[in-house]
Image 1 (tube, rainbow, N blue to C red):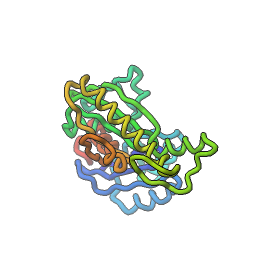
Image 2 (image 1 turned 120 degrees about the vertical axis):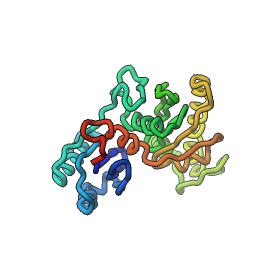
Image 3 (image 1 turned 60 degrees about the vertical axis):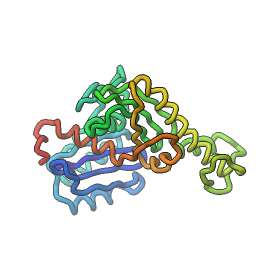
Image 4 (image 1 turned 90 degrees about the vertical axis):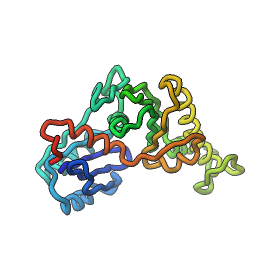
Length: 251
């Protein structure tokens, strides 16, 4: 049994995995505190090992590690982004500068036989990565996610003050709808442009795979086929964990 941890900017997501099968999974917002997680984990079979991927600060990472140690007497084996692993080759000349969440999403896609693909993470940040069928990472882009775009716009302007949450439309006749629609359509346009630019380099039209908390909102806006992928980071982490010493059997 393995405990898998994905420490994201907004939430901590986790799964208990046994020989390739997910026994349990869940998520908690950081402002909910770790006590709720501890209570949940206490009700589950004890893991034999723990593996984590983190894009958060050291303090939160250490707090989670301390909780796992206190509950199960286990250290967390944190993955730091490598130059290559599990058939994926990182395009960054400084491998550690690539977010481990992006790397693991590529590991999951490669292990799933996704072929030539573009991976889109839609959360606090909007991340895009091109991955060839042979595991070559061609590179990627990072932009604010649609909700962060909205927050940045409202924080930097004096008179853009929506009266309500707004709805997505093709063209707006009020500020609320204009802000929401402009930010979400900008995100969709960036995805479409990136896919178009990467297709010649990949030699074929890539499949488009979206993951993240806001992925479902972006898929309908794209003018191309796209699929939703759930828990790409955790699935990639499970693939990587299987390659670690003493973990092949999953127990």
